[in-house]
Length: 89
Image (cartoon, rainbow, N blue to C red; front, side):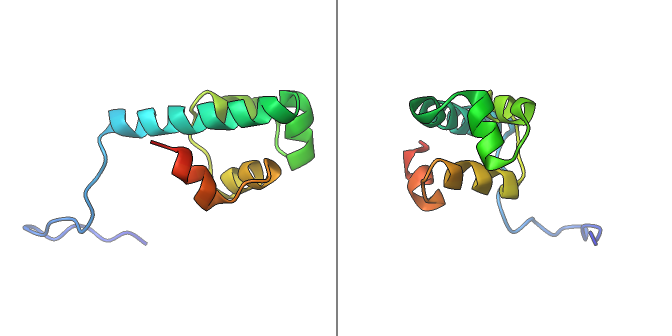
């Protein structure tokens, strides 16, 4: 449950600007697409990892995704999440 901010309290973590979040999501999507294209078609890969074709296409285009979906994708690509994020710059 969220609580209201107390006046004068600063947030603990710095928030990323919206443009930066979009840029990171686009980079992640591009890496997913490039890795996936090396092994199979969009339709086949989506079937293999049990997500919809439209969801996978959205992720590859830079759409936001749940962490559970991200894990399905990277493990489906036979990549550890740590190794995947080393490629994100």
